Every structure is written in structure tokens, then in C-alpha cells.
Length: 212
Image (cartoon, rainbow, N blue to C red; front, side, top):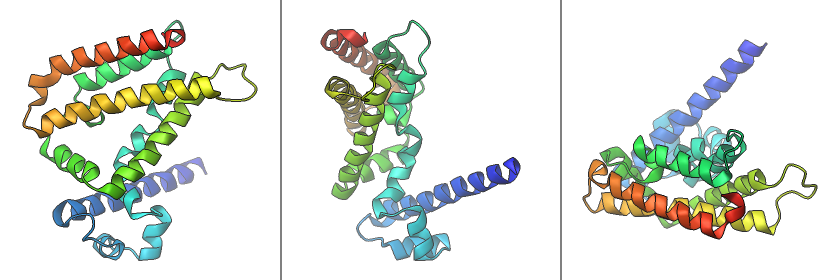
């Protein structure tokens, strides 16, 4: 029973990935606005109703590439080792992402990654959908920052802190991507990107001493 359940989940995940990759390929080639949901369904060999069961909105086909990172900050805080503060864990995680050139940090000059970022940030409806993704990230982080003995869940303080942290991570990534898009090479920019990230987290620590 467990094996069957696991197989179904793997097949479902593969379908999500295949539909998303098919759509992104079409969007990169023809432009987001010029490609219809029917075009994506036809290219993927599924019906429109089937496609909508997996992706309720056209924009979700693109944002699925970020699905693995949704709630990441909250997961990092929740899973940090004993004695490690939330900001120390988040700093370490972001710096490790820079080191491995994780696309989510913006410090990645692979042509495919650059094309995807141009699609994402150059399409107003995708930017709007991205804000929804970031709001969910903030909510998950606020919950992770909430004391375990709290009976009311995340309060204003936790939500404000989460908003600041998510904003810093977003601005750092967007600045890295801007420099890469302007012709910079990831390896050449890595040292400065690390310095800027360290300074940003130092600033967070000063503004949020209870999390440092």
C-alpha cells in the first residue's frame, strides 16, 4: 500500500514537472502572453481540464520552478540546530546558496537561468503571482519564529520580522540577478555578493536583536 502510494506521488510530481517544463519552454520561445493554456496542453499531450487540475492559473506553470523553495526560510528556522539563532541559520543558508550558485540567490549566470529570470521579472502577471508566493513564505517564516508555547500563533512582531527577513533575501537576490543580467559573471561577483549579504544580515541582527 505504501509502495503504491509512493508511486502515485512520484508520478504526480513528474506530471507537475513535465507540464511546467513544457510550458516554460513555450513561454521562453514565444513569449508568455502569446502562448495559451490550450497551446501548453496540446504540447504536453493532455486536455485543458487535466492541465487545470494541476495548475489552476497559467502563471502557476512558471512559478512551479520555485515550488521547492516555498517556505524555505521557515523550514531553515524550524530545523536549525540547538544553540543556533534564527538569523544565524538564515545567514548560513543564504551564504551556502551563494557558494553553490543557487539560482534563487540570483548569483547564477547559466543562460537558461537568466532566460527564466527575464521571463519571470519581465512579465507583470508573473511578478504579481510571485508576490503571492512571497506572502506565503512570510507566513511560514512568521510561524517558525513564533515561540512554541504561544497559544495564538504568529503575532504582529513575528510577522514584521518575517517581512523584513524575506525582503532582505529578495533584494539581495534581485541585485545579484541585476548585475548578472548586465553582463557580470557569477564567479567574479561572488566575493562582493557575499560581503553585501553579510552586511545585510548584520543589519538585520541590529534591527532584530531578539532573533540574533
